[in-house]
Length: 212
Image 1 (cartoon, rainbow, N blue to C red):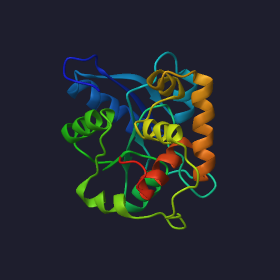
Image 2 (tube, rainbow, N blue to C red; image 1 turned 135 degrees about the horizontal axis):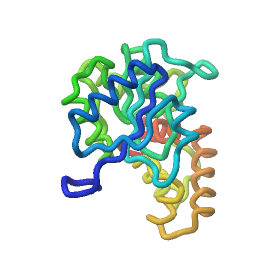
Image 3 (cartoon, rainbow, N blue to C red; image 1 turned 45 degrees about the vertical axis):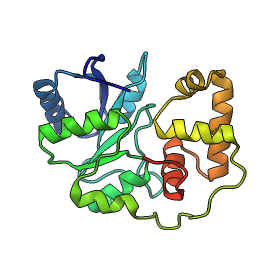
Image 4 (cartoon, rainbow, N blue to C red; image 1 turned 180 degrees about the vertical axis):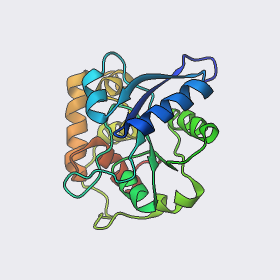
């Protein structure tokens, strides 16, 4: 849990558009003394430059025309909750399905953006009022039934995945090895019928297994 006396919130800024990335970087540097941008670039650049601890929050600008892989958006998976900036409701739905913890429009003012980043870093969900209805909208084709056979330990792991923790952090929280944590994470993904951690959290939330 972060507080006002803690170290600065570590932020990774992911944006394919260099102009948007530059504008966001300037806004963050000018307005936020308690937010430190530790990585900035395209998703590929941020992933390749990562070193040390994971960020506390990821700011993801999806752009005007979000890229899709296999017919769906791919959110940054950097071991931290994601706040997505979207151009419209359709892109918001795609970002939410990809695992974003919060949704704001791309033209959001600096003050509410910074407040949202702090909230998402603390594990909260933040939605622009015009996008809040998406939070309760099931994905097309998503199953409403609970998965079979989640063990108590796997439910603990699922809850920690919902906090955006990495395998290493899950291992430390549960006092188990990182290898065992990875084993449990893979088991959770398999039982939920997904391939990505963010997808597992989104599906589990819509089943009522975790609260975002």
